[in-house]
Image 1 (cartoon, rainbow, N blue to C red):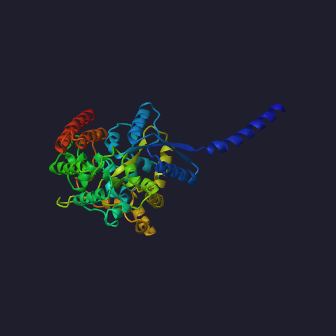
Image 2 (cartoon, rainbow, N blue to C red):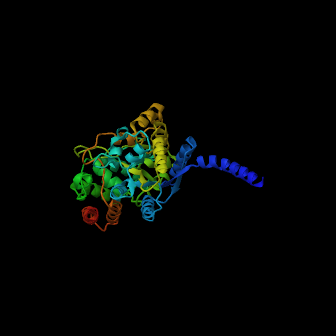
Image 3 (tube, rainbow, N blue to C red):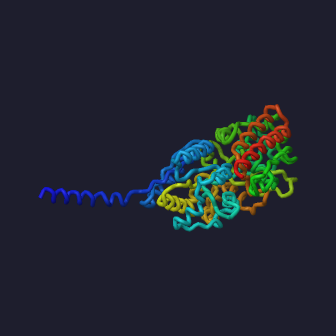
Amino acid sequence: MRFKTLAIASALATSLVMPVLAQAQTEIQWWHSMDGALNDWVNDLAKQFNESQKDYKVVPTYKGEYDQSMAAGIAAFRSGNAPDILQVFEVGTATMMYSKGAIKPVADVMKEGGQKFDPKAYIPAVAGYYTAPNGQMLSFPFNSSTTVFYYNKDAFKTAGLDPEKAPATWPEVVAAAAKLKASGNQCPFTTSWMSWAQLESFSAWHNTSYATKNNGFGGLDARLEFNSPLHVRHFENLANMSKQGLFVYKGRASKPITSFTSGECAMFIGSSGSYASVKRDAKFKFAESALPYYPDVQGAPQNTIVGGASLWVMSGKPAANYKGVAAFFSFLSSPKVQSESHMRTGYLPITMASYELTEKTGFYKENPGTDVAVNQMIKKTTDKSRGVRLGNLPQIRAIEDEETELIWTGKKTPKEALDSAVKRGNELLVKFQAANK
């Protein structure tokens, strides 16, 4: 009788445990580089997805700046402990593409996961950047941004400038900066991401080559050529502005943004993805506008290039994890989620459907300038404006920062600095080509 009782108890325990096991969620590890207001956004996205179904749980983890999270992801892969999803900034695309065996193409993940996935639904300039030569989409566009022009409307008013009209050309930027300085402003203009904004995006905006081989899309033997007469002219213009106190260099990457949100600098070129931070931190009226251009350059303005990052799916994971990743990406692609994210952060709505939905809400009319990023990107790209896809691009950007910083301190002329950056950068391209033959 005692054995019968034990058997019944064991059976009851098993029946209680089995449903729990059946309902166990598959955890999807997501490493990212979104901090501040954007970290809140990422956490909210994961929470929304997790609450929308019961099979999967996305766990977002902040892993530092873009270069830090990418390095952490690659190191984790080599040690067999990579996350399911790794957010990688756009300049890491070539490195991820050629990381043999490290990634699983998003097109395959979506197909195997039974999710609808049409690359044509995405904004061409965005989808094209993350697409391989054979037409296969490799990573999932996530926080896609582009460079835009921000200005302090209150400072413009004080300087006697029209607060409803941003300077459209570089000569107009110089003129506006002079008036701002005359009104007492100590930092009329600054820029973040010198390499991305004033070299890569500047080149595309003026339909001018940054590198050979269609800026690297045509092969590993691409070489830099951003020391053209137009590029030199532009940096001579910035150098003259710097000498006159019209342009003030405020550091690398996104560091200069606080100089704008604090009210110190009146005009600022930065990421459209900075909109959330600007809106949160600026205590003044501001507006977003298109990038300035040189009106005598034929073909300008063309289009700006994608910035931000995409989500790469790491290889070697169980089928259940990939199915969960596919479901999560499908959730992120929905027009409603995309539209809400776009309005909240300033990042691009990566599909035309989400852009149209945002337009219908009246958001662009209520927030003038927030459609600038999209309008700069939807124009059909050329071989010179599709983007920049080069190996070792993060290191090349660091070289560009080092060399251009010598301009602002007067240690090199713009031509000397750009020539040196091209020479040093090409040496890295040769090494990357040799390592990936």
